[in-house]
Length: 112
Image 1: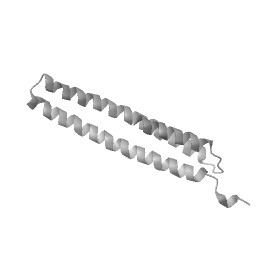
Image 2: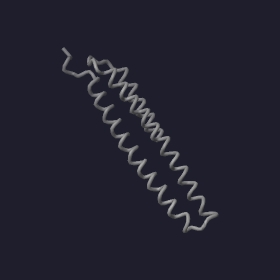
Image 3: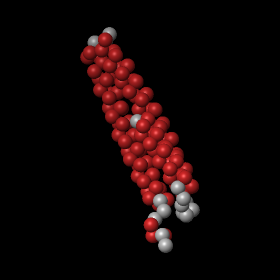
Image 4: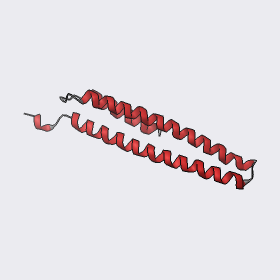
């Protein structure tokens, strides 16, 4: 997940350094950076949920499994939900960056 964030950050930087005539490009780049920061926050939240799930699983060593299973299932649902949100955010950021990159790439139509 950290690789995805690094990839997105790199794409933001490449897009930022590309020449572009559109006046809204700085805003679009800032929006992409904001989305990347939100994505990192979501990654951190997912990692926290994974740690919580790991703690619940560790309870199998000391607690009755009948008491642990419902808690593990609950934490698993949270992790799955966070993963889905993270996937959607990553896909949205990637789409934004691809559009930005397409808009900032010089076209061959201007060659004389």
